[in-house]
Image (tube, rainbow, N blue to C red):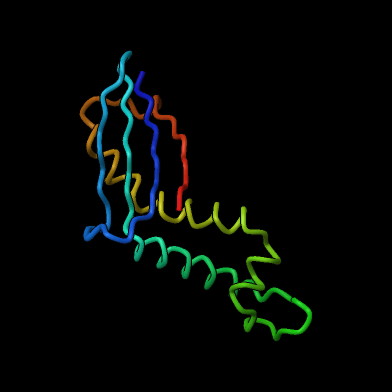
Length: 118
């Protein structure tokens, strides 16, 4: 059984968008440490905020569709926004990261654990 642990870390000094480090573990397990460039994290955050604005949320003091990012994060909760950003990044980065272990894995055996560090 193949178990994959994906760790996403935002770095400012990383010139590439995505770096994958593969560590083979006992019992046919593989750990992938995925490092995502800071600019890519910012882009994912901006896209999530843009999508939230499209929902035309009604927040007192703001016109529909004109709510600033800070107010949206406060309204939806930082944990929910962070989760949406992580999900958006995983949709893009997960297939690329999995390509490094594709020859060994069974599609149904994949499990994901995430750790979003700043």
